[in-house]
Length: 242
Image (cartoon, rainbow, N blue to C red):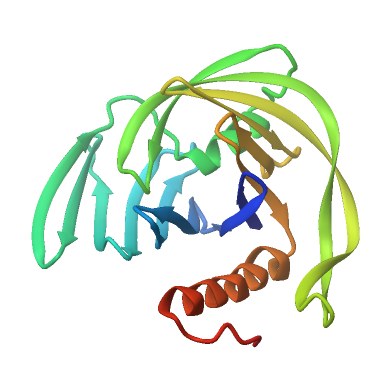
């Protein structure tokens, strides 16, 4: 599933999420690319994570990579029988080990709607509390989830290249029934709409950040082209079309 990331109506990145079943486990691959203005210049950050969870969505292993203009690091680890996540952290040639206690059942953020959906908990008006471990930030915290009413959202199903606009534009649309989940985490409320399979359709918070499911070309190709032009301008090179 591919997502366009916007801030204040302007695309600042894209994300993707891939779920693969592996016998007695599920592999979750996530990718996040953001380009935002920091200290007067554009900074780019790419985050990739691969998490393997069991049938109850409990974390088993983790592989995280961050690569950006401000630095890079990797983190790899496995959850031992004593519910401790042991991590090997590598940054700027320095290697450290860390441990994160996971005494209670935890779930990674992308699988929280999935667990709610398959647990038959998409009943409007109900509230749930869950323990979440963020594989990109390597932190664990509690979140509160309130289930809202079902709505019908419109998503881009396919795209075509517009030679006049020099961009990919929507061609076909699809309607998706989705439940609204109001997630409260660290004092920030995020409204997320998920389909019956627990896959995110749209997400938005009060800071103006939105994540919306879209066609690959609109989520990725348009951002890649805009990113190239922005970097040419930032380096003083010609902003030619490609």
